[in-house]
Length: 147
Image: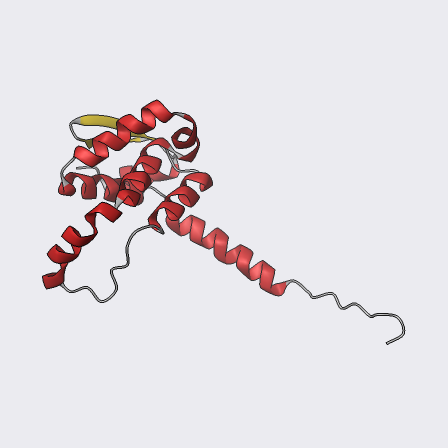
C-alpha cells in the first residue's frame, strides 16, 4: 500500500498509473482539459437516477443497462485520453470491448482509481476563477446618436 506522500508525489508529478480491466493492463496518462471535457460530455448521456433508493437500484439497473453505453465511452476516454479516443478507432474498439466485458466491481475500482488522479478540483478552480473574471467584466454602454 502506497503511503500518502507517494500518492501525493505521483499526482503532482503527473505520473501515469496502471489499471486492469478484463485481465488487461492499461497505462493511463494524466488527464488533459480535453479528456475532462470528453468525459463530461459522455456522462451527460447517462439516464437520470433522481430519488433512487437501494430497493429500486436492481430494477433501475435492469431497465436502464442498455442506455449506459456512456459508461463505456467515458471509461475509454479516461484510459486513452480524448485525442487518442478520437483518432485511434482500432484501439478504442479494443478498450471498449474490455470495458464491456469486465465485472462491475472491477469497472468501479478502475474508474475510482482514474478519477482519483483527475485533478478535478484544479479544473473546478480554473472554471470558478474564469467565471468570476467573466462576472467582473464591465459592460460597455452604447449611445445611439440622436436619442
